[in-house]
Length: 597
Image (tube, rainbow, N blue to C red):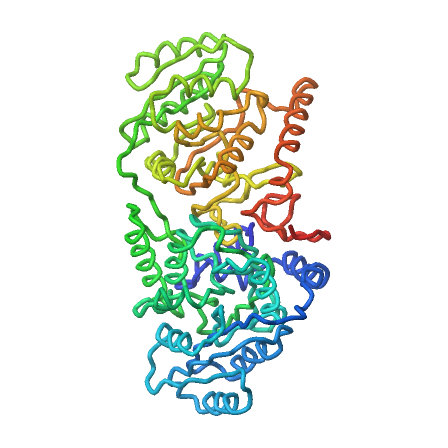
């Protein structure tokens, strides 16, 4: 895990080190003692309870491909031993010696070939690199499924049993991936990556899947294996091509640590400086992926190596209706509308201001003033405050194909914010799209909604300081999440109508969460867009829900309604690991006992 919060002094030290990949520096050298204790506790107390019983009937054969080129001999032996020591024994290990020049490695591989019938060693006369070596291995596999293993990494002893158990239960699966962690130079397990379930928009921003990956052999053969020319990102290219062929129900995530990625000098997990060509290869893989699926987009490098900023470009940019409920607080509304008008590079939009019983003279004067603007309409809503009702009425009046619900206490930061939101909202499989919202000090206020946090729902990475990367950089990349906040939410108007809009039983709280879950239940992905940025001054107009008895009562009622309607989603958020805390928003490790769902 990447440290969520770093002291300023440490950040300055990081900035002073030239050429060091900050992400992995944080991953492996700057982990807090607290986090290390959390993970050590998790390994000792939680992980043993997760393993399934060893299958008594082991009919399914799993083939493992290991391309080898001059690895440290101790690491290679440990890798092979991690296969030999599997508690599931119906496997085939195919090692492709890609013309290693280390004679110690060659002698060891020859001994394996001679002494174990489950091990097949093929030797290339010339070094052909990892893609070709993997393809050679694929030609010699006879298992129904193929697992890819790097020559210096390790499988957990239970890895194959967990995979086989799932494939026996769900034989239609064609791609299975697992959680992973890292083994540092001292041999200690660190930095667990507890992953999201299938998350296509996260994959298009970063290869979050990496290891362990298991594919149906017939599918790999159909795809031609790994592609020559994508070495260093051949696993990313393969994942993208596989994703294009499969339906989500053919892909499964095993939420257990089945793979240990070794960190040492020269490994890509240690620093991207060791393998700079991987960045270019990954970008090329992503470019060709979008060409194949016919999605128009602009791709830029992300804030870290091997992370990508994808701006999706629809066939046409539709008219957008930006809906802003307001009451009094002229200075708040003026800052919001001025920022939208001055900082938005999107052409075709209207602003619908829903005036909910403003009485302050300065606010009324300002509403009269802006009502003459060609892009602004002011609608009076002379009823008691009900956020859902206000927005529902506005959507019916909206002329845009896309509607954006926007709080009046927000302020636009980047000019492309609306293009980013609309580009995603116009993708056929996308429902709600939410922005990155920041507090005035630029710490994160919203980076998507996680179900179950605090017993109901809360914001991902709230209060993460500016410049911090969070959990595997997730605050800074696009991804599917269960929900996004209604403080800035884009959605096609037709989808809004199809699901019945916002439920007016939620007057104030959780209406956006309920709406997002309805949209998700209708078969759409809700996507957090990290590249649309606004400040959010948070509920300045309405005030705090806890400041009087009536508001507290209403808030409790709306919480109860959410729990009654969405208890399964609250108990298990498919885009947030069961192994992560439910009591904080910082993606720290869960330490109390629990069961996987």
